[in-house]
Structure formats: structure tokens, C-alpha cells
Amino acid sequence: MSPLAALLAVAPALPLDKAGKYVAAAFVVFVGVVVIYVAIMGVKLQRMSRELSELNAALDMRAEAERSTDGVEAPPR
Amino acid sequence: MYGKGLRALSLATFAALTATFALVFFYAPLDADQGFIQKIFYVHVPVAIVTLCAYVVGAIFAALHLRTRDRRWDLRSYVVIHIALIFNIIGLLTGAIWAKASWGHWWVWDSPTLTSFLIVFLLFATYQPLRFSIEDPERQARYASVFAVMAGAFVPLNFIAVRAATATVHPRTFGSADGGLPAQMAWVFVVALVATVLLFALLCAYEIAAKQTKWQLRALRRRLLGGEAVAPLGRSAAPALGGPDGGGVSAGGGGSAPRAARNPAGAAS
Image (cartoon, rainbow over all chains, first blue to last red):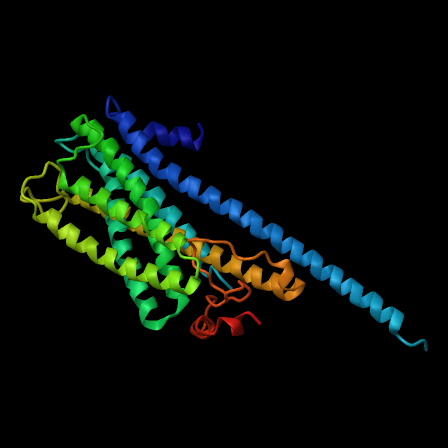
């Protein structure tokens, strides 16, 4: 028996009847709004992560350009 | 860096919410009068309490902004009111669901508690458009803070007025003549309230960290690629944390924010 099935077996039965759908709806609203908010935060985080990657790439390009410039200008030994 | 302690707060919130749901459905006794429908109370009431308290906290932060001119307080006030509005919507929806199940109507206009909660929501719903309507960040922050203080002062007055109302069909949770909550229900309610407070604090912390990181990125882009690589600031309801060109960051931490807020040009360098 899986842990979830075992938990459900010992858990008392809920008297859902007519009220069940309203209670479920209230908890779904609560969890749903929070999940939507977290999803929006996730999208924002993705955007920031993309921007950070762009800045990293720009920094790498700049470092490479500086290295190659130094190589050309360095006097031969 | 920003978002310090977010992991611990996230874990605490998750644990508290899980414990709340388990206690609500498998520990809290059924209400003799309302039966199973009373379980909505463990979501609706903590959310409503946290919402109203958050509006007052937002007003206190706004007052601190007006007193110190530190934009970090404006950011905190904005974020607290922003999340409180979301919680207010949850409170209104769960309340309407409970009313439909209990009274047979989604909304009862005669109830001072419901109507006053809606009025508070509508009052604070104007906060974002007010901010959006003012382009200058300094004026926007100042006017929004004045509004937040006035509206925040309205919340406790409104609460007292509703409690003083004699005829109401809305159930009273605490301090009623019937003896209030039984011990088991009260214990579960306290856990639910703590979980809701933690969730509110977590969402605020995430929002503040995201806003500060966004501005930090903007400043970094400006330093690395120059001013022309940074998109000009558009009109926004969110507080501007940098200078007028959006290049600086003044809300990071430490003591730099007040100086940067007073001298935005210096912050942008």
C-alpha cells in the first residue's frame, strides 16, 4: 500500500454532501490566486534571468575584445 | 544581496499552510450550527484580518516615507498595499462563496461587514491608478504616501463603526456573547492565521526582492553598455528606485537610499 493510500485509509471521511463544493471552491480560490501570483513572479524571474544572460554575454564580448586589442598593441619581444 | 532569508520563509510558509489544511480537514471539529461549510472560515477570516492589518501597515510605511523621504519606505508601502489588494480579492471571493452556501445569496448588501470590506477594497483599488496618473516619481511617491496614510486611517475607524453596528447578520468570530470559539477550533484558527501572515510576508518579500533586482539589473546594464542601452522609463505605478533616468539603485540596503533619493543624479553615476 502506498503512503498516500495508507494516509487516506486512516483519515476520517469528510462529510462533503452539499457543502463540499462550496468549501472546495473557497480553498481553490485561495490556492488558485496564490498560484497565479507565483506564476507571474516566475515569468518576471525568467525575464530577469534572460537579461542577466545578455549582460554576461556582453561582458564576455567586451573582455575578449580587450584581450585581442592588448594582443595587437603589445610590443614584440 | 536581495531576498535574504527567502528560503527559510518559503519553507516555514509551506509547512504552516500544509499544517493548516491538515488541521482544518482532519482535526477541527464540525461546527454544530453550520456544519462542514464552516471550514471556509479558516481561510476567509485570517485573510480578511491580514488584509485589514496590512492596509494599516502600508499606511505606517507611507508615513515613514513622508517623514524620512527614504524611497525604501515607499516601496514597502506600495508592495504591502499591492499584496493586500490581492488578499482582499481572496477575502471577498471566499466570503461570497460562504454567503451563497450559508444564506443562499452571493452578496447581502444589508450586511455592514460585507459592504464595508468592499468599500475598503474599492478605496485601496484607487491607489494603483493614482500612482499611475503621476509621472514624476518623486511626486508620485509623495502623493501615494499621503493617500495611503489617509486610507489606512480609515480602516480601523471603519472596523470600529461596523462592530458598533447593532443589526447585522454576519457572524462574529471573537468576543461574541455566545462564548466565542471552542478551544480546538481556536487552536486551528491560530495556526491558519500564522500561515496566512507568513504567506503574506513571503509574497511581499518576493515582490520587493524582484523589484530591487530589476532595478539593480537596469543599473548594471547602464554601467556595462551605456545609457543608450537602457530603455527609457515608461509610466508606471510601481515606485522608481533609481534616479530620473532610471540608472541608479537607491533601495538596495544599507544607508545609501536616503542620499540617492535626495540626489538622484548622483545615484545614477
